[in-house]
Length: 522
Figure 1 (cartoon, rainbow, N blue to C red):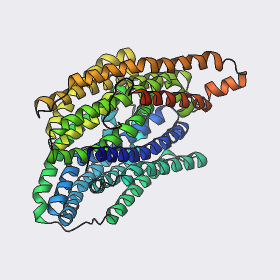
Figure 2: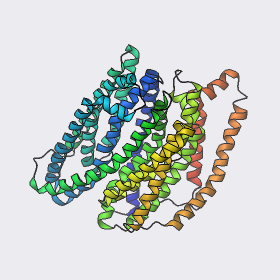
Figure 3: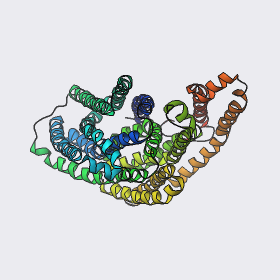
Figure 4: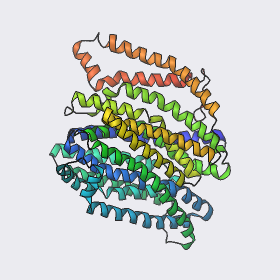
C-alpha cells in the first residue's frame, strides 16, 4: 500500500473515530448541563463526582490504558501468525483472567467503600463520606462492563473496526442523559442516576459482543498453544498497570488536595477537566487510537520509520492543539456561563471554573502528545519504561500541587497537572531517542515551529481584531435585549463559532504560503 493510501486511511479512520467522539462530547455537554442542574455545586455534587471518579479512574487502567496497550499488539500478532482460532482462544483466557480480577476488585471496593472514599478525599466530613458510599457501591460494577468492552474492542481494532468502540461513549451519554431527565422530572434520588449509569455500561458491552461475533470471532476453548502469548500479555499488563496506576494516583492526589479546598472545588475541577477533555478526546485520543495498530505494523517491517512518524505526529498535534487552546481560553467564561452551568452557580464560581480550564489548557499539547508517545512504547512492546517515566511525572505533580495550591487554589492543581504532563513528554522523547535510538529531527521541528509562529501572527491578528470589533462596536450597537441575548446567553455561540471556524480555516488554507508541511494532511 502506498504512503498516500496509508495517510488517507489514517485520516479517514481518525475522522470516523473523532466524529463519533465529537458527537459523544456534544452529548457530554448536555449531560454535564443536566448534571449541574440535578446536583448543583456543593456537598452533594462533590460526593457523587468523587464516587463516580473511582470507576472512571479504573476504566483508564483496565480499559483505555494498560489492558489495551498490552493486549492489542499481541492479539494482532497471534491472529496474523497463528490464525483466528488461537486468537479466539487467547481472547477467552484473557477475558476469564482479567475480568475475574476486575470483579474481585469491584467486590473489595464495595465492601470497603467508606475507607476508599476517605482515602480519595480525606478532607471530607463523615457526613460527606456517608453520602458518597452508596453511590460508589452502586457504580463499581460499571468498570466490569467497560473493561470487558475494551478487551473485545482490541479484537475489533485488529480488523480495523473502530466504529463500535468509538460509538459506545455516545450510547453511554444517551443513557446518562435519559437518566438525568427522568431523575429531574420525577425528582428521583441520586442513587437512581447511578443505576442508569450501570445500564449504559451494560448496553456498551452488548454492542461490542454483537460486533465481535459479526466479525467471525468467538470465545474458543483455551488452547495450551497460547499460554506463552497470554503470559506475555499478563506480564506486560502489570508493567502498563504500574504506569497507568501511577497516573491515576496522580488524579487521586489531586482529589486529596482538592478535598481540603472550599466545598464545591472538586465539582469545579471536574467540569473544567471535562471541557478540556473535549479536544483531547475528539482529536488526540482518536488519532492515537488509530495510530496504535499502525505503529505496531510499521515496527514489524520498518522500525526506523517510526522516527519519522514521531516527528510528524508531534508537528500535527502542535498545529491542531495550539489554536484550540487559545480559543477555549479566550471564551472560557462563556463556556461555563452560557453552556454548562445552571442558575445554581454563582458568577464567582464561573470565573473560578474559567481559570481552572485555562490552566488545564496550558497542557493540552502535552496531554495530547503523551497519548501518541505511549503508543510508540507499546509498539516496541516495552511497557515498564513508560511506567517509570509516569512515576517520575507523578512525583513532580505532587510537588507542584504542594507549591501551587496555596497560591492559586483549585487552578493551582490544574497548573500542576499541566506542568507534570510537560515533564512526562520530555522524558518520553528523551528515552525514545537514547534508549531505542529514535531520531528526533530537532532542526526540522524548530523550522516548523518558527514558520507556524509567523503564520499565527497574522491569523490571530485577524481573530483578535474581529473579536474586538464585535465586542466593542457590533454588540454595543444592538438594542439592550439583543445585546443580552448575543453576549450573555447560548446565542453568543452564533458568532463565536463562525469566528473560531474561520480562523482555523485560515490556518489550514494559508499553511503552504508559510512553508508549513504536515504529513498527515498534505
